[in-house]
Length: 244
Image (tube, rainbow, N blue to C red; front, side, top):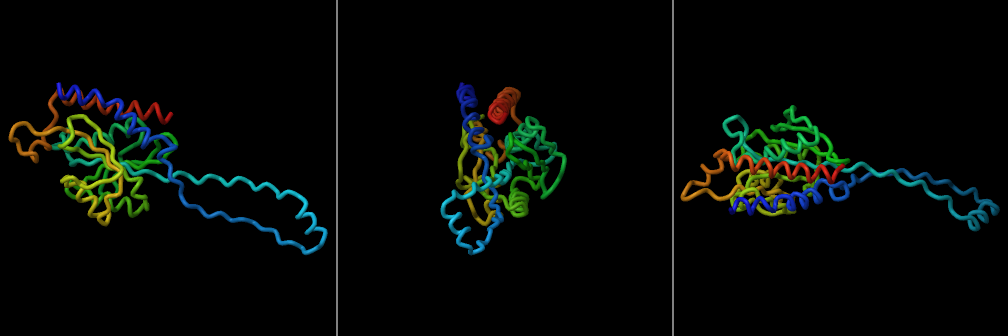
């Protein structure tokens, strides 16, 4: 029953998330661009001076809008078949869902990550799944941010959260690592900054006295797997409807 209640808020949460992140009006940050302005020098004649005082100035051509700056969307997890489908790798699944929805290939490996470039609507995005193992995720994320000079406000990290009910989403503009080792590593490699957005995906608490470290490395059971699939599908559909 608790799981069902958590799932019931998925659609509205996904819509809020996508309006914040995937609509071009919200996600665009313009790249600073210098423009050359031509100036004509006056000849000094009384006639030209008189004309310049009595005629309206010529309309200036509109400046072209610079292209939007890309977003980096990072999903956290552990590489390899052993960890595929586990709670700790749900960030990887979110990246795969976005890549599938937008036709973005994740076939390349760069900066110690599976990496892809594409668009969500007219907003350029880079998708990354660090292959360093969770506790060293910052090695990959820090290198990407440094190389492409991405503003931290446009670096979104997606990761699992034990403190949220299963399948609940929470989008925050900044914050601490909350004990999550992947986030701890990323903050370290971003010079201690916590000023970047993050999407937390609830995986629930371990049953009984189970060790949390063991719980996060367990695969979802069939019922949870189906509910998680529906959850990610709702996110995909919500952002598709907002960016087309």
